[in-house]
Length: 69
Picture 1 (cartoon, helix red, strand yellow):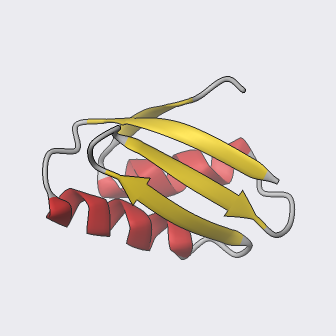
Picture 2: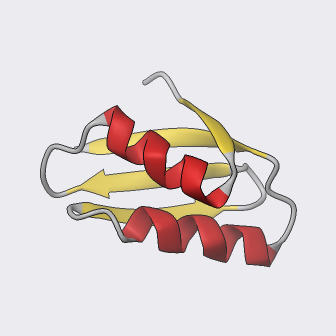
């Protein structure tokens, strides 16, 4: 399963690294963050609730929205 999120406030490679690290810490998530589009593509190897993703992003201080498919 795949989810895409749109991230507000990312402006540098450090931001990308921080977000990727936070998302990749979630069990079952492999994240790839793109600074140019300010998005993260999440490949999920098992079900992961939106609340878990939200908590990880809150912990690193970034707001986001889920991109509609």
